[in-house]
Length: 442
Image (cartoon, rainbow, N blue to C red; front, side, top):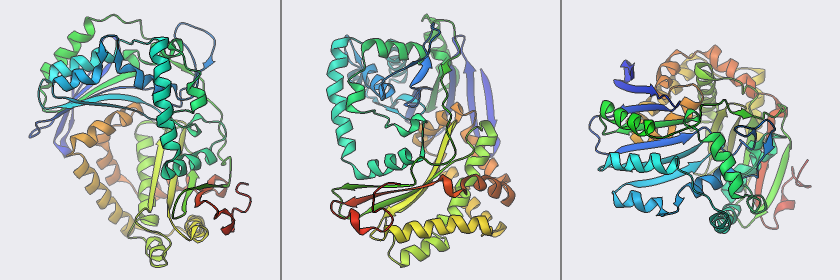
């Protein structure tokens, strides 16, 4: 077992790659009574085309299958796994994102029993055609529920506008039509391909003894039989840097219009510290340009263009990335113009210098230092960084080292007008009242 020291943060991370390929990280936290354990596979909604384990021909599985598989993992022949966690006083959950599926629990007692439950249920799949058919109705209701949520439709509508071919444009849960095609055989194919320990990471944080926990996990995995690790062959898509749709509008039952300007990332091939540096540089630039202390924010707030729903964000993964800036507003066209003006002005003349950068760097460092005292935050974020060959605890020293040149270079990858799209949600019957979307789409 290796130890990784982060002296600046006074943290010691314990790590071991087991014989079956599983990466295990353990982070003891003094003063905490709760422990989080996450068991995550590098498999998400975008992994729809691949060569199955032991085969030579590529297949494309129904959309939403990673999320469907997550749901089905909790149902076993002898009952529901949630009940087993509950009997030990543990709280369990799971989620599927574009790039990963995570299973997790938190507990203050019976840590090893719950860890055993977690490892066993994720590593012992049980699917039948009968249980799969039953689940289709449950997930179908979930899809319908999200279809009725304006903020979710705004978010995914903007992403769909941005991408031509990349499967990130497809809703994580799929559609009612796509999940209807899922079979038990599909689930076993995806499970056998993506749920091998060599494609997974186990992370433990909180009130834990590292050596004892590592011994426990090591022994558990040694008692189980797995196929030899095989590289996963995902089928990559060619995605242009320009957006697929410049603007579109959707009418829904909302009281106030909503709008997002989406900016498609051009640099999506990075990993490791280069990716961390690029991501943090763009986040800092957005903080200066669109944060709550920016000239932009003051101007649009005073003009009533934004309200408390206003937000901005930047997401980056291997193969795709995007920035989103938007708000609920009765002045959709004016807000879009104001956002686009800021983006255009950064191309003509870089708008801030070292003083502004140092200010947002200090604020960002403060955010991370506070967040790194939260075991919930670390448990939710650590694996995402690790799967991109980054380390969450490197964020603070990387921020400290960033220069204006770094930020300018990174932000330049977001400055093309062809990378911008606009998505609006308007109250039913109000579509014709906007000037930019008379035909809804262009």
